[in-house]
Length: 232
Image 1 (cartoon, one colour):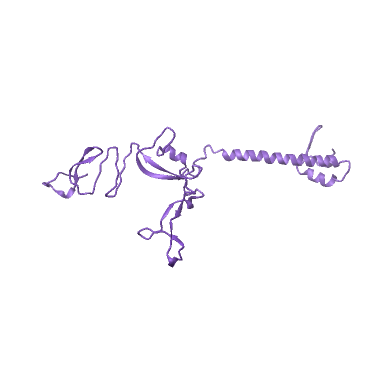
Image 2: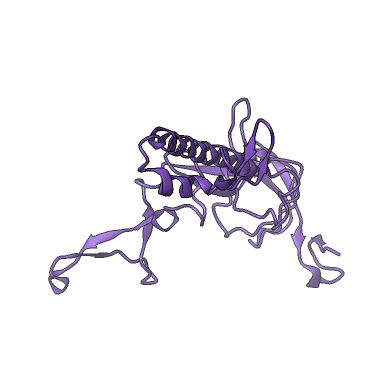
């Protein structure tokens, strides 16, 4: 090597050149028969170096993208619950656990067991319209079936929703609910029930025994012929 090659740093046994010098050398000396082999070797070394740099950069970038320690809450941690999040609540059946208690909701699962929440790609297709055959006015085409309030009726799309799991809360919690006058079902735990049905006070058969019932009438006033109850 000679100083004409433009070395940035030269010692008695090594020389440091600009990284793009090999392009200049290939352009200048690529047609020189004596140097053709050396120039081709430069191109091979440069290509391999570039490939190795891309592979190493990709590996490093992938590892850095997974390195989130201390950064989980940088932009907030709120998200729609996945199945593992729901499982942590104890509201669904799991291996060695049977969920029991009052039904507080449900989750839809796809074929892979993923929760179908608003960020799920098939969220919009979780329901399908219930159709019926129209009359001659609709040319006997399929039209949406409607309920008594003239609203279209829908059902779960079985192609999207493979399973619906009920969420049951049987923990040490307080529940406050309003039920329709019939078909309330039964609750096995302790409860205070305000029943709007005019049954008066006394006892009511429930679960094979008798439960005390007090009439709730704060406006009944003193001296009323029935024992009444009021809440403060």
